[in-house]
Image (cartoon, rainbow, N blue to C red; front, side, top):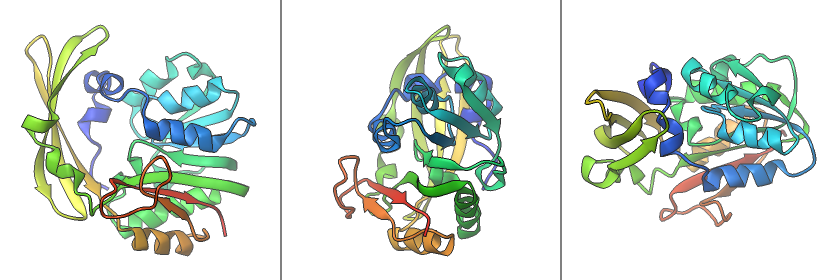
Length: 247
């Protein structure tokens, strides 16, 4: 992995995250996958905790894990944040001493694992933390769809109203892009005239490679979907959604 994106680690930039990322289809998908019966859930890359606190509100025993302290500070201050166990850790270093019925990664968090070694380390850490009859679920952008091509100032710019800050203008710009790796900038313009730039790199894994690495990490044949309505994956679908169970 590269160093952490300042968009997540800088406290001021972290405050913009929820305004940019309200409740989404992926979070509804994972909440439905967790189900209504109370169970133990690990939300990896939980960020500002939107999904984790909603699952806690629904009565689940939730742990949220993220490497960025600035994001966790926001998460634990939310309603029901005091009912979630928050852990600051990298996914590959997970060592929580407990098992979970569901492990989920939303918001394309899986794409921060930038090579096969990092993916395998994360998958094996997840497998160690899964109980019998459990589920791991995550999504990654489909490399065939090339969604990153719209990450330019003209198409990506938006203005979001951030509580206690005001209107913040945000846009993306590609530093380098290829089928399987994209480095991008996120530009922030604050109402007081200050500007910040975060930079991040994402891995776009191929579906056959994901299946192979899952099996090498102790999982069975996964279910793969191209979108949140569970349609099949294909070159015209923007997601690869993975639902896997221990072998």
